[in-house]
Length: 587
Image (tube, rainbow, N blue to C red; front, side, top):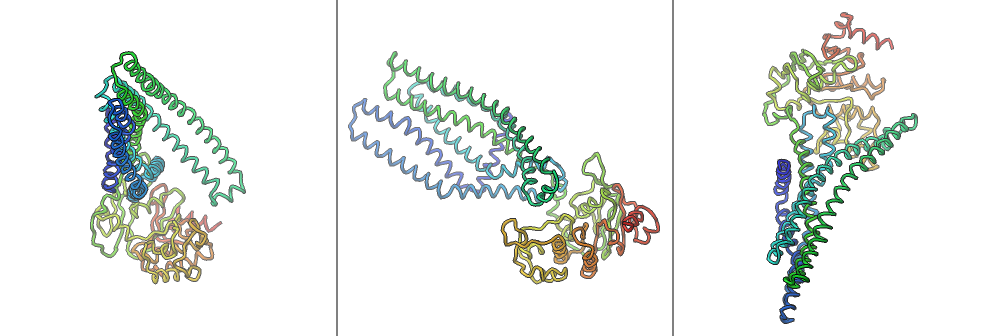
């Protein structure tokens, strides 16, 4: 019962969203479904029974024709109203509901802590939620409307049948009760089956990307990795087939027993047998009443099965919505102070004191970090792979919050500053940057309304304007063949143009020359120091020759800052930095 009420609350949550989004749809569709249910009972049970009753009572043909004409008119109007609504309004309303739910998912994803993305469980959850939000709200509404329609049918048939007989409606109720009980087990099996199937579907999509996408095509032809992927793909298909055979078989057997008892035994045998005895042996029921109950039982049989199935769908929707609500409750610790206001003042210094951080409680990635960066300084964070450089940058950008220690901006705790306001002081150039299927101007400005004069100026400074003279031209060919394809070096210069266009106080450059050849690397740093000389810049680089001019160099090992100073000072120490620098230059 507790699970049932949880399903009620979850379905009610989605219905509340529907009512807020498209109230006219919910109310109109609900009214039409009730009218449709009553119309169905009228046509299948009452209409023919009344005609037979008129014949038995020898009423005039005029009365029968008038009743038929009025009935036809009312039924025709109800069908016309339903058809107009379904053709002109339903798809529009459903699209609107789906877009509202997807917007909620997009907004929630945008505001989630980056820490959440490090969990494999998150990707499974977001994949399932994203699939569900495309049609789950529509499913909930349709399920509710069908339940409303079937309830109207059920009440009408049972109510009318009880005026004639008691036993037949009781048999119908028994069929409904058993049907409902079996469906509860079916729902649990179906949800578990669906979850396992979608998990395998996620793995299947990953293999298909490797087999079809162009970035894997070269290695697929030059190595044997394609055979490895195909072998795993076939293994996955066999496990998927086994899952379908096992779970599908169990669901099928239970469904068969449900139909045998609820439909074949109760409605197809017991009700007709009982009524036959009454009309032929006991002779205590009129032909019109016999016909009404037989037709009502047939309609009830069809509707009872559908009603119990819809109750099962109701439970199933509730379980899926529970997953969506768990997604909505994912943590937003970093983003929770978005509403805080902060009067910006010119940047002076950024400080970390005894900062510690770990992606999990068991393992600390950063330990006791102390650093201070002043306005206008060119700072470098260097070290071997896995030393914690990228994680440190993520904390400086407040993509993560420290587990311990303090971060201060101009002497003020960063916790007192709105996240968006704080991040607006930074411009970042990541090694794994993204280029969007948008115009050149939009990719530089990263906004819907770019200042084209500033965009041209930024492109000219990075020596890309001649190669990209049309600012409205799309980059990439994912959505069309007219898009411009750029080399790795051109893309990296485009990202540098973003940095110049943004004109922020502090610049973060994570491996900024990773896709640029050695000849242009020197030119790249000349451009940086020429056009960004007044900015505070934090470099993360494996090429230590590029950080020699920096005011401060932080050398990291095992999540700690081991050495700190200028290049000459660190070389004199003859420590980890000096050894790494000499090793690179010896290559």
